Length: 267
Image 1 (spheres, rainbow, N blue to C red):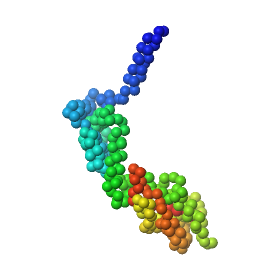
Image 2: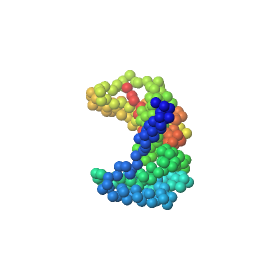
Image 3: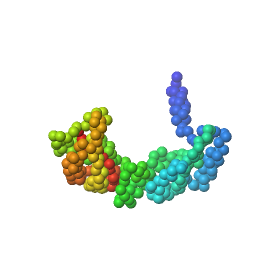
Image 4: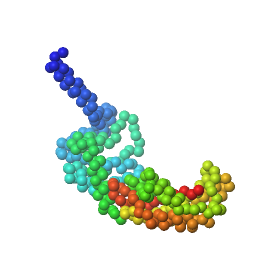
C-alpha cells in the first residue's frame, strides 16, 4: 500500500470519526407531529438571523424558582449581546413532544459561539456579584433558595457536614467530665445530645442563640433523667463554640453569615 493511499484512508477515517462525534441538535429528535417544537425552532432561526440570541433560565412550573442573581445575569449577558428569558416547564408531559425547543436551540447556538461552559461561568460570576451586594443577608439551609455551598466549619472538622462537627465533638469530649450519677444512654435507639442553634458571621464569629437537651433511654423510655446536667453541658459547649473562630459558611468561595443547627453527642 503506497503512502498516498494510507494518507487518504487516514483522512477519511478522521473525517468519519469527527462526523460521529457531532453533537446532536434538538432538531435531530423532533417528532414530525410535534408542530409546536418545529415552530419554536423556526422562530429561533428567524431571531438568530436578526442577531437575537437568548439565554433561558428555567423556573419550574407551579413553584416559581426565580434566579436570585437575575439582574446581575441579565447585565453580564447583555455585555455579550445575549437576551435573558425566564422559561417555565409544563405540568403535563406528552409522548412524542419536545419541550423548550426554542430555548434549547438558542442554547446550542450560545455554546457554539462562546463554548459549552460559557453560561455556567456567567452564572457563577453573577451569583458572586449578588453575594457581594448582600453581605448583610443571613443564609439558612432550612430554605433551599438561601442555602450555602459549604457549611461553617469548626477547627478540626474532617467533613463538610452542616449538623455534625467532628472537630467540635472532639474538643467538647476533652473538656467534659460526666458526673458519677449521669445515666448513660442504653439501647439501639437511645439518644443523648445537646442541640445548639448558632449564628456565625462572615468572619467566623459564632453566637449561640438557643439550645435543646435531648435524652431518650431506649430501655426505660425515660427522657428527662439527665436534664439536671443541662446547664453543666451548656457551660462547656457555649464558651467552646463562641470563643473559637470558625471557618464561615461559603457561597462561591465567599464567606457569608449563616444560621446553624448542630448536635453535640453525649454518652
